Amino acid sequence: MSTRRDTRMTIRTAAAALVISHSPAELTVKQVAQAAGVFPNQVTHHFGSKDRLYVDAAFARFLRDTSRLPRAARSARTPEAFATAIARTALSMPSLTAVVSSLTLARNNEELKGVVSGYLRLLLSRSEHFLGEHIASRGWTAQHGVQRAAKTFWTSIFGTALVHQAGWVGTYEDVDIAAGLSLRADG
Image (tube, rainbow, N blue to C red; front, side, top):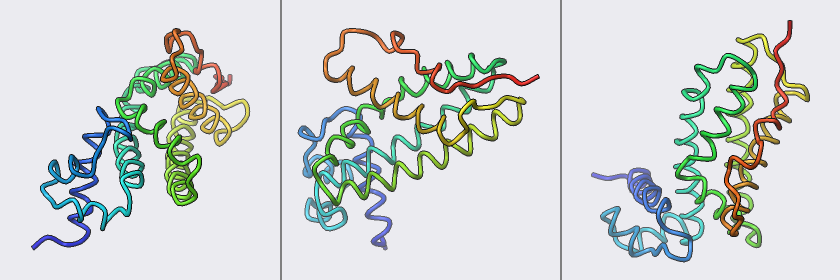
């Protein structure tokens, strides 16, 4: 027998697959319900609104996609190569567009602001941990501290994706997000 938590997870997983190819306006509760094998009223029962589901699904997928960052950084031998590798990887994550759309959804919605804020705190906490451990193991430092470097990095990633979605004709390579990390090798 399926539990409430299982049903919620099934719905979120189905929606996480759909947010990659659907904007918030394009995604419907009916599509999510069909993909999850549940009734549409179960979707709204568990998430309250389509927008709340979109935010939850986008961030769930995005947080999963961030597991690519340590793999991308593994072979980097210099702070510059490390920063470039994680910036390129972050900008190429399939869920980035959905997360930026989620940030936009939350702009005028107090409930969603709280949800997004919680996910961003989790993202930054994980990022600070990853960045701190990685640079310490290499004997590197972050010029303005790990916490600030993580915030600057993700703000730059989200901003670059947003202007790209808004029609910016440049490419991601035109923005040097890697420089924002301000990492250096000591010694």
